[in-house]
Image 1 (cartoon, rainbow, N blue to C red):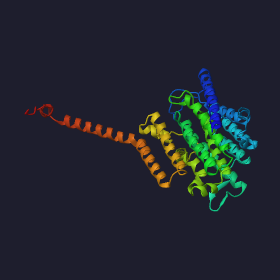
Image 2 (image 1 turned 120 degrees about the horizontal axis):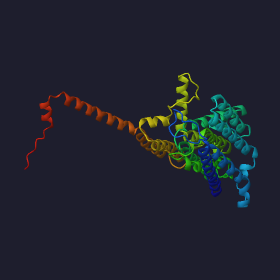
Image 3 (image 1 turned 60 degrees about the vertical axis):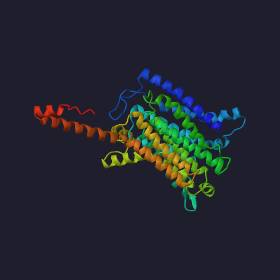
Image 4 (image 1 turned 90 degrees about the vertical axis):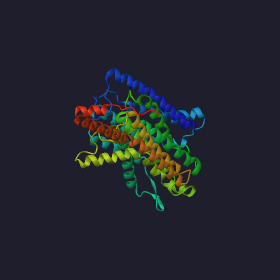
Length: 408
């Protein structure tokens, strides 16, 4: 565990230091675009924080690969790097995504170019074996042919990348959601490998990637917290989605769901597939609604608008800070709800999720109740004013006169 924490700490320190440098250079040399109509912020802000997050991930991964063996005297991550092609595919795909994102942040690329780059990055993963290779369906664990594995992997990675990118509209939103979701996912892989399956694969690629990603997001979040000094941009949001999806699909090749099922229950066997999508339920919901909305209007599914869920929360009357906390709460409720299936009976999980959803729903829709109260009060005041104006002077004076009561 301590070496995962060390890798995450390295990513956090590098991400913070580079974020600070990018922020200073961005302010000095004007490395920020004009404020767009759909943007929530009104002050031009540098948006190349994804570069800092990327470098944090790269440095931490290289440290675990080459530096940790000399520090510890034992190569705890030997299984992770025993197949260098898989690791290089992850780092290469991440590099493609970041270069693509930086180019989009600077020149605003068209959606077809961005989608093509995302497919290439996901295809590299599948080509090197970082792919969905098993599904807990029926009596078989395979997904079919290698072509089916490629298709499933590309679809999953591209979906998660764009879902994460779509919610990147509030300060600290994506980084915070990634920390919560990544933390839960790391606990899941830790528990499954160390306690349930009891394999040597405790030091594995999904856990290392998740620890490094959480660290990079934490280091960046310091400068991205509201009011943000630096944005991660498309480079950072796509990188977060790419690494989260990579961790998820690689789990399907590392954990035999049948082993989980025989030791726990039926549902935990599905968690390697369900958990990544469950913890991203809000981004995926936003993505689905946006695609449906834009296609219905005859637009590109990747065309920008100001109708995302975070925009709707602000329009409902939430403050910037409260809207972010609501996203955190929904993410945490779903994520920990899925994780609890490994530890307690299903009815306790249902109770936890029901209470969590109720609290989140009340917090989400609270401004609507306040608005209705304010509207009712304003309507009552206007009605009273109209009635008062309709009275003649003598009646108005009679209404205003105070009649003292008897004192006993």
